[in-house]
Length: 340
Image 1 (cartoon, rainbow, N blue to C red):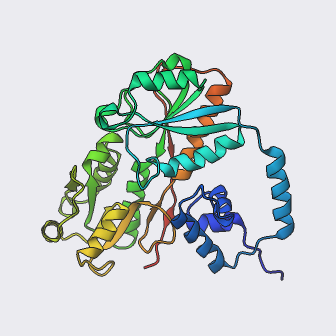
Image 2 (cartoon, rainbow, N blue to C red):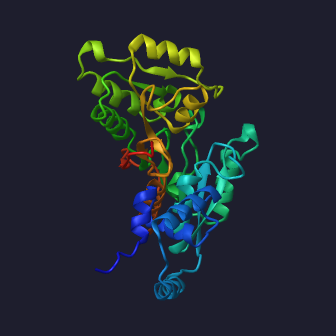
Image 3 (cartoon, one colour):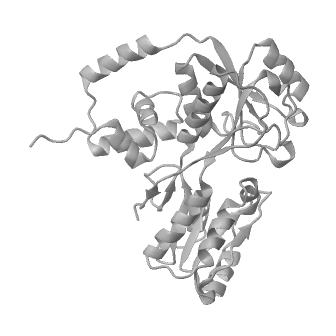
């Protein structure tokens, strides 16, 4: 029986990314962060992936044939500063930009925050109109900067995240509610009976309290003696958890399972907690399926491409300006069992 050839799809499923992201990583594309490229390449090596040279030649010819000349610009508008010399939310932006480039659009980033050295709304409007920009991708907004006054009747636009108050645009985001619910159910399958959650309340408020709503909904199905109060983290100064506050919470509710973010898993390890010995852990937002903790894999690349597809549709069909009602497209992640 012939040995099965490892495909890009196989690697993508293990890494929890799209086939396009795997393809970029294996071609050592600088569109991806170096850490992402290296992890995907490592997984490919471990799985025994071998490129088909004839297929590679064919795909090169197809890419050259299908590549479109850049004929217009799409603006990425954000209100957050650079992160490690990258635009914020690059996990959305880079796959979106790669897709739009295949359609003849180059993405340019614009920082909108006059008080912190960025552009004013008036300056941004003049630049976009002068450059003939047709489409705008709006990044996740900070709470005080979630209303953007531009001549929106001139632009097709789509937003990432759910914090934007004005204009009313189609929004694309990961399904945080399903992520929390799935983590809760998976911990129950692993025998946990007193499940708690560490919730970043400031962020949760920007997504309609999706994490809190899902957790409280699942908790309400338990007997009262098994319900655990959320460890509500409100960290405007980005402080980390302290061992004292975690131990007090664990002992008060006899917690045997915790749902939290990826960063909280690392923080708990630094505080000396051993998992799964002390308690089971599930992460609501894992970056890659090479991590040791179980949880829901990120859908950032799919969120990025989906928003780009919606924007391209709006541009091609002349749909401009603020919409009469808001629509939200939620992209579901997939479960990763971890490497514990």
